[in-house]
Length: 393
Ligand SMILES: NC(=O)c1ccc[n+]([C@@H]2O[C@H](COP(=O)([O-])OP(=O)(O)OC[C@H]3O[C@@H](n4cnc5c(N)ncnc54)[C@H](OP(=O)(O)O)[C@@H]3O)[C@@H](O)[C@H]2O)c1
Image (cartoon, rainbow, N blue to C red; front, side):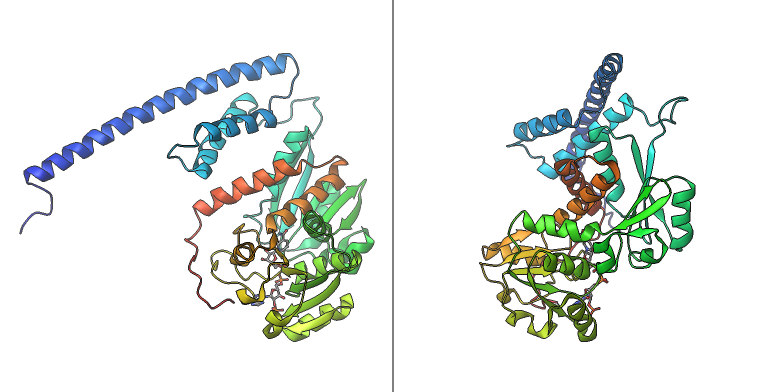
């Protein structure tokens, strides 16, 4: 049997070249490790100094400057920008841990306020990373955790019992939450869904920040009053966005796959209804996708034919993974103004943050945090479809 291992001179040379490259890489890795440890030693000294002068140890502005400077230095480098942000983001995270290791609250220190997201599934929620970063940035002594909850009523009772300061409510509990809260804000009651709870001395008050978040995201790009707005989908997101658009004086048409559901939402909103097959014939100034069509991993799909898009339209997608859905890509190629789902997600989070803390939310930090988290989550995600299939749904 001939051996598959290279035995020729050529094979031996290749094997020796490979071993040499690997030796050099090992050497470089050792140097990188030594340099990282030196960096951490300096960072530790800075942490000590800051504690002496009672300055906050974590400094987001400095961290952003470090990343921006490295991005400039790397302009002609081989390291792709997302990889640069990931690598140095991890080094910065290690630096934070060394300067301010997570520890139990020292005796006598103020107890942190606790916030939770209640949902099922909830493990992939980006809310914890976004809110914890925002709390750190403004110096709010708070901690935000994800809790997988099957039965909402006892979980809400636990919020009172444990004096938890606030909660986000997500799938599948946004509608059921209305029945278990002490007070519900008028807009959330009208929408019929709650995604935010504020605990005011044991009185649990519900709000809907999806609605206001979507309106903030859209209003950053366009006025809404008197605009013809086509919303594709008739689920929770469509309901929240639809009420927001009507409140702003927009003229809504609901387009949905299941007519009965679409007609019901249209009736509740006092809007028009059109079946999904008519999506390319609906005249509108603003088009909003609230279906999951186009979400990872089905990234080649879009909820209506691309030819239905025209350059005067503002096109918004509630989907935030991927950030640039095929719908938004096709829209951008035709010259449309686009609004991505991260904008809505970040603004709904910013409104929660403001309700809980009474402070202005650090929106840019929250957006950067969500984008970083999405980039690193997608590293481990299954490969997305990238070919336009022509089968738009
Ligand atoms: N960016 C944000 O902050 C934010 C917030 C909330 C939600 N979202 C996103 O918005 C999307 C919808 O969420 P939701 O809570 O509204 O979901 P939902 O309540 O389940 O509603 C989904 C809607 O999409 C339609 N739909 C589902 N699959 C479809 C398909 N293959 N073709 C055509 N229509 C389809 C459904 O139509 P039928 O009535 O025919 O079933 C339904 O109207 C999700 O991607 C979610 O991640 C984003």
